[in-house]
Image 1 (cartoon, rainbow, N blue to C red):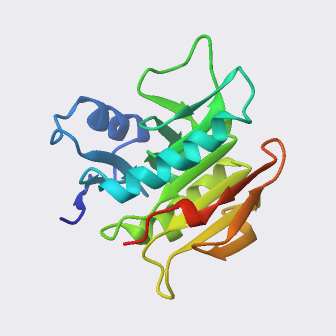
Image 2 (cartoon, rainbow, N blue to C red):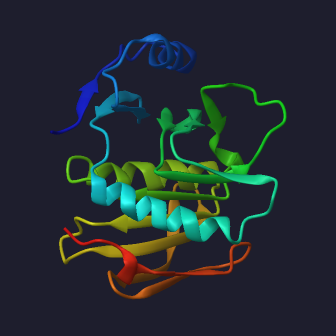
Image 3 (cartoon, helix red, strand yellow):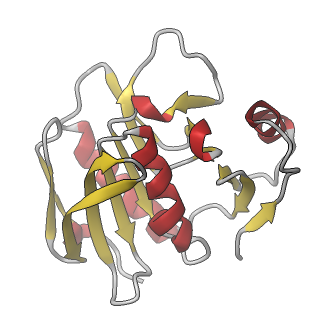
Length: 194
């Protein structure tokens, strides 16, 4: 199954777009995001996709501070890029009084992780990193199961404008190290291959 997009009137404001995203009844189990001002509905991630995210999450719990959390289904808002994005994993401090129950300002995230799905890998490679960099998220880990040359893992950092610098790129089977504040090595040989 592929992703579905729902276009909005270009004259609508960010607040109108978010209200529509929050109030509409979407298909149960789907992932609904706003990507560059377009509401995108994707099917729930597949089993191997979830296994990869779970393995990364398990490793991250061993190194994050007590006042941080790892969120799996939390949207992060990037209004300047007309984005309400739901990464596979978001590492961010826990807020005592969040502004919203439906999303977190993207600038609060310390790390986002995306595991590509065949139907929407392009968003994870192009649109989402531009939004994450614009928000100033320090690290973006892309696990690209569908990369043209075979499965890869790329760690991006040092955001400037809407661009990240590639800090490390490896093929499945190699290791990638997340710098401080994580100081964590992830062994990608633990990831299932399609």
